[in-house]
Image (cartoon, rainbow over all chains, first blue to last red; front, side):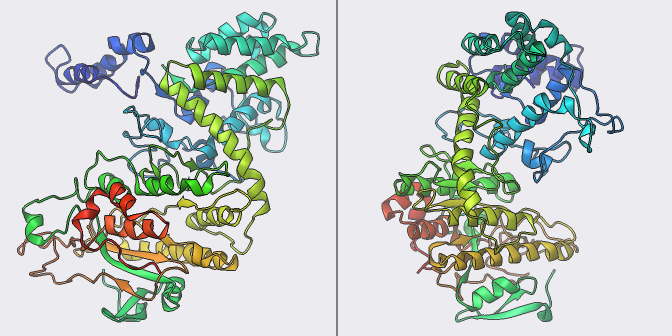
Length: 236
Length: 377
């Protein structure tokens, strides 16, 4: 829930919470979850440990974008938040996973998957097992479509796609720093590096402010670049 | 669980005598009859030759026998030790990589996801999806500020991030963009239309066939591919479930081999099977349990086919010398007589890996007197 490579001490503290929730009771899962989320190692996070963190599952990234930007179902979707994949792929091929569809009883990925295919580090990253060269591009394109295309779809079955609400981003777009601050806090938990922030700001600032729908274009570019950044894809 | 004689396609082996292929395997039967398919009998994870008594005394056994996840890791490493993380496929890739110096594509390609068989310290492998044409990132061809900003972000993170996760993510995305661009053009030119895939495995092998067809265009000298077909864990309904499974296996392998032959590459491509384990000879009435030794198939023009390598174990249910159980409690789990180390060394040898390199990548090989099973010509 918090990090792919918890220290043995962290694991022990969580195990102790399972054995005794403080009230002498064993097996209190609420206490276990609390122990996982509130442990000092989790609270300090990357500040005290550069190996802290985990890769976000592709569908977690998508649902995070939806939640953060108040997604609404498409008009003809009967209230269902539809996930789309470009044909001929299915959802599994695009995202490496689909909801409740893990291919075996061993989940979508194994707990021992190494972070790097060249195995010189001990770090594991289970979620990276399903990030292949094929679906990296497909996921990127799915996000691109969501951010640039889906809000405009009104016909041909595409009117069932899920839409994101970018109004707040648009309202801040005149001030590039405010726009990036807002999206960085909302989507990256403030994790955008200063160098990447500078690159994105330079690009946004180079867009003409006098163009029609300039603020909307800037907001969309910012959302795209921030969600295409590695800092969005990793939770720390 | 026995299959009756009239559901078998008969074939012959000089030592084993008459053998039978399940009649859902007409294509593979035909390949065996034309000497392009060999069977390796009773192969499995072993540290050293293991007798029934040695098994009973737990001498030098592979770790966690009979569990899917452990055996699915030990077959790819050829080891008995779960801590070993380098796959023998990855080791082969490392040793033959200098055949691919002019290529931008990695030597090893998986079409069935991440897997330990291709894991290696030196060479990363590429994972492709069989169900979709290679996608390139939207806007890849635009000379736009958006794309160059994304490139800056990725390059900066790959070089400077303090988080190994962010770094690896950036590197993966950069590698994917490069792979997609390099492969897209080659695959557009090589559609291998004589395969019309109907199933998951056939789709995977179709992509492999296209990548083999595009070999020269991609600048590849030698290639390694990983494909997969699951569903064999038949604890129940085995006879019914075998029908579509065997049919898929047969059609996919046969149509792949035919396509490869049409490219005049039959002698250059060898296909082999691997599995976590065989099934038990005991049954719960409707299915079987996790076994140990099983049969493997090796297919290709360079294979010395039409033969069974190794020998069939005893099928007795009492006093079975090959059974990993005691005489009162017949386990139905057959102790392999051929190890994964020997099987993989034979294939590595065909790929041009030297004897010294084979021993280095397969430490258990030294425990067996036969280092080459002889099924490759």
